Image (cartoon, rainbow, N blue to C red; front, side):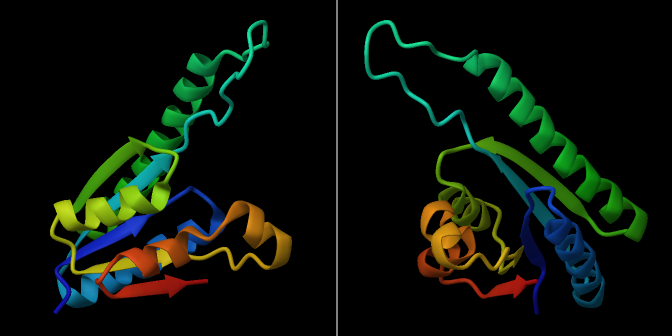
Length: 145
């Protein structure tokens, strides 16, 4: 039934658990895993002359390297389990948009993703990428904790 699974990852402990679940799910369904890690660019944009701007190039290099490491870990787990795999590293200020677009572009028929289950002010300020994905896709989404 499910042949192409999209697995967003951020390298967190919850994402690692979600990866293990997604691999078992893929094995049961004879599916492949497409995993995406969205590196978020430096959020600061100077608004005035003379502002001190951190070296955003260094930040972006490091965040992209971390995203690549996260994808490589999923790739290694998939290879060890014999599950076909494709990895995507991208950068965006809106991870949910990248996740939804990747699912569509790669013909995925389900999204399996971890949720951090943030509450209160953390949810308000940090948002919930999982909720945004749920609101912007027509695909089934399996939320893992």
